[in-house]
Image 1 (tube, rainbow, N blue to C red):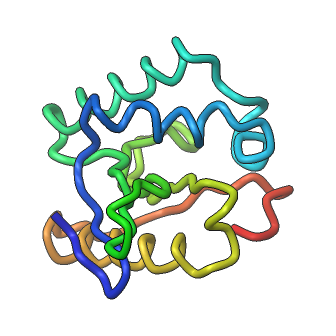
Image 2: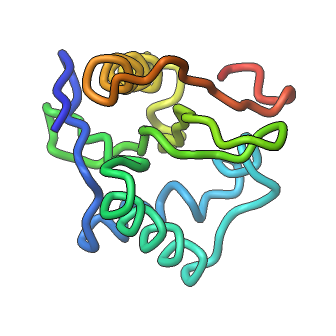
Length: 136
């Protein structure tokens, strides 16, 4: 779907569930963006929600796959989020801890931003980040 120098960004599929759990069920990863790690059922619900978003909007959070190994190392993409009483287009991402501080999130987010402006013809794209998430 989207290709960068090191990454392939594509829709998630059910077979990505185990890799997704490696992200969403990791306490340290999830503490950066959410209150706590997900359980297995919450991870499946998360995946289902994004599969539905692909159908409804044509986008959502996508699998980020490392070209070199074909491994899903994270997710990055676009979602509609409620913010200040309106719906906005947001770029979001979550990556396996092993891939933090390697530029993967930045590379994926830039590609998703370009997709939002060039393919979706967005006027604005936001990123909502907790003020405690310094790295993001």
